Length: 149
Image (tube, rainbow, N blue to C red):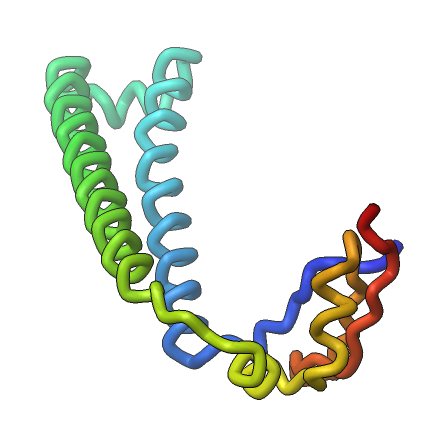
């Protein structure tokens, strides 16, 4: 099977790689944080003696209810932060889209992507294009496959 999606993490900037690693780490920490109380609760309900003794030591179901309140409050704070982040990103995306209204001519487009000017028009007329890349993610060749009718 051919890979049609370019998977080249070496083309990402260091800032993007570190950001992706940080988000990955935060997501796993949140996932573990959310699962630990559920595992403890299910073990307690299934009658695990060690967990029952631990529950008695920490105050029984009343302390569990207090911990569940903290647990749900933490969830609500995390959801609120996530919604704020989504709202911020949507506003930022709108600002970027407004700023991206610059008109680019064909020579600038070809210079940016390092494509020959004579290859551009056949690719515009094609319904499907095969793009060949080198190991560094630069376009090597454009092959217009299927003509539009």
